[in-house]
Amino acid sequence: MALVRLAWVLLVGTVSSSVLANAWVQTSGEPFAAYRERMAMHFMENKLWVSAEAKQQELEAVLPFEYRPNDACSSHSVGVLMFHGLSDSPFSLRDPAQALADQCIHVRVMVLPGHGTRAEDLLEVSRQDWRAAVKSAVANFSSEVDMVYLAGFSTGGALVTEYAWQQPEEVQGVVLFSPLFKINSAIDWLSPWLAPMIDWLDHYDSDDYSKYASIPVPAIAEAYSLAKEVKATVLAEPGRVPVFVALSEEDATVDSAVTIDVFEHSFVAHVQSEMILYSASRPTNDAPPVHVVNTDLPEQRIFGLSHMSVHGAPHNPYYGEQGAYRICSWYQSDPDRYQECREAEQNWYGERSKVLQAKSDVAARLSWNPYFQDLMKHINSFIHKTQQSIVVSN
Image 1 (cartoon, rainbow, N blue to C red):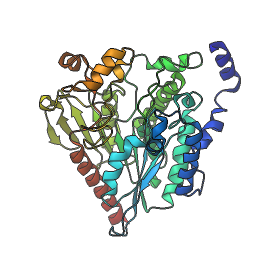
Image 2: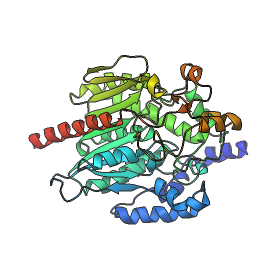
Image 3: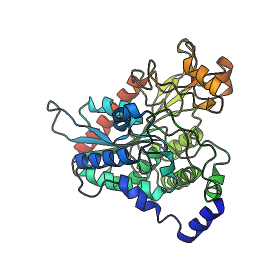
Image 4: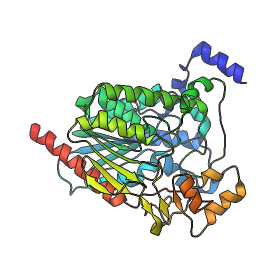
C-alpha cells in the first residue's frame, strides 16, 4: 500500500487534493449563511460521530460560525476573521470569538479543508488548499466590514500571518494564539520524506467531538512546510502589519523559542506589535512590547500553559475548569492510565513535561487559561489602538 501511494504521488502530485478540499471553501460571493448550511450538509454526510445520540451538538462544534455586533454598537464596522489549527475545529476559537463580539466586533470563524469530518480527510489535503480557503474567506468577509483583522490558532496562525504579509493593505492587524512557525520536534524535517510512504504514526478513534485524536503524516508534512515558508516570508520583510501574539513557553506542539525569535526579528519592527508570553519559569513582568505572565500556579494545580489552553476560557462548559471533557490523550495507549487521568479528583494540569509528571503521573493537559479575561483585555486594547491609528490617518 505504501509503494502504491508513493507511485501515485510521484505521478500526479497533490493536484487531486483540491477536488476534495473544494467542499470546504466558501465560494466568491457565497453568503455566509448559505456556506454554513452547505457545510452542515457536507458534515452530516461525512462526519465520523463520537456519539450518534449527540449529532446536533457535535455538528455545531465543527461548523463555521459568526457573531454580529448588536444594534447598540457604533457605526464603525470592525471584523475579525479566525482560523483554527491542524486537527481542530471552529469550536477551539469559540471563547475568544465570543469575548470579541461582546466588544462590538463582527467575528467570523472558518473551518479549514479536511477538518470537521474525520481525520482521514486530511490525508489528501495540501497547504495550498488551506491557503485557498483563507484567501476566499478574506475576500468574502472584506465586503462586509470596513476594517479586517485576521486571527489564527497554531496552523491557522501561520496561514493568517502569511496572508497579512502578502496583502498588508487588506489587513489592519493580526492576532495569533500559539502560532506555528516551527513544529516542536528535532525531527520534523523528516515528515515530507515519510509522507508519501506512511499515512499514520498512530491512529486513534477520538472521544473528543471537537477535534481529531490523530493527525496523518502527510498533514504534518504540509504543516511543517507551511511553517518553514511563512517564517522565511516574515523574517524577510519585518513589520508589515501590527501583530499581537499570545503563547506559552512550555508549548509542546510548536517551538515557542522560534516564535519568540520571529517576534523579536520581524513583528516588533512594527511599533504597535505586542506579545504575551506565559512562562512557568520566568517572573511576571509587564514591560511592553513583551508582557510576561508566570504560570507556575500550585494553588490551582497548574504548571505551565499548554498549546491549546492559551485562548481557552475557564468557564467553557466543555474544555473549561469545570468542563465536561478532560484531555488525557497522552495516555491513549494505556486505557487504565487514561481513565485514571479522566477521573482523578485532585489532578494537575499543564503541558507534558518531567516537572508536571513529577507532580502527577496521570496529569492532564490544560485546556483553559486562568488569565483569559486579562488576555482578552489586551487584545481589545490592541484592536482599539490599531483601529484608532487607521481612523486618524484617514
